[in-house]
Image 1 (cartoon, rainbow, N blue to C red):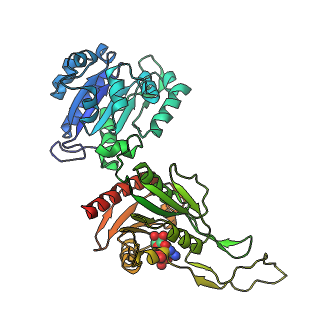
Image 2: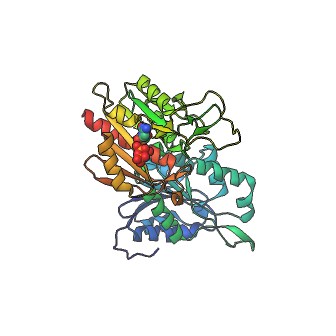
Image 3: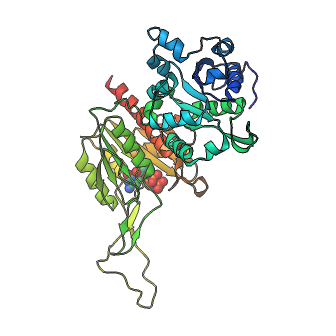
Length: 427
Ligand code: CTP
């Protein structure tokens, strides 16, 4: 990605803590400092002891225009700037090069030096750029650590393939500085609330919903035709379950009314399992009062007019056409309650076309406060998939579109937004 130095990009005004690990690739960290500064970021370098075998703190500090932190310097000046402040006082942390040893420390939480201590203490978004010998990279231990780190929400760039210092070839080379800078920009764009990242990564959770009761519907409904057949839809329940999980992580008491799904129950959530739309409505009404109700379920709009007690047999001829009747609209019913309406009612809109127009009509028709609209046309793969692009539609018709994110991230961001809306209403 090339950009004139003056054009503001995602790094403009950002503060980056750059942790430099050991290895021959450490020299590229100097170029990285320069590039990050070119893109408008302020860089605070932190060198491990082995990094100092390859580059000096003075070189890093000269390029950064800031003092470089090292174990020695920080032992002397812990009172001046402690490791906790280092871990907080930035918008993101970049580890480049990240050695096998450093990845192992990060994955296990072992913190024998300043760099590892800061990495353990930080809740900021972290990007690592691994660099090591190809055999070390491919070793199952490193690959296990890599998987652990990704699971912890750590972003990874590289390593690249190529000729290595020991006349070997394969993956292990540090990503190029411009690639690291691009990956950092992408990470900061995706995670637009960096100060909240610890919470977003599930590592540190501000209890913004403590004392609140949150009610969430999720999953499809099954509308029985006979004892073995039903009408259903493709909803997996992932988005609704992610909202429930994020609300619980934010300190709420959560009731999740779920249609039949195959995904696990979220931790710390009271789950009420139902099959049909009518059962879902009854369970929702029984769970009230709530401070916030989020209707993420893909409720079947219709059910068979009649459910047979016995299996319908073929009997050698085509069955009678299935007569359908409309199901109750749970969202509209709860939104219209004169008494006991939750102060914040959020609907979802699953649309295959004219997403925003339909969502605007839906918010008026259903009487809710906010609609989370998404495009569920087959090409997007949203229904049953792991990612979602959502648009937040408010009652005044205004729209906010979020980038494509995984459904867990969407859930966390939605919950952060709902918490802020509830707070604003109270305040
Ligand atoms: N909803 C509900 N009860 C229903 C139907 C929908 O509570 N019987 C809720 C959903 O949980 C969602 C919102 O209403 O929050 C919109 O769902 P959607 O399927 O997009 O809309 P429909 O009302 O079914 O409208 P249409 O099928 O015409 O798009």
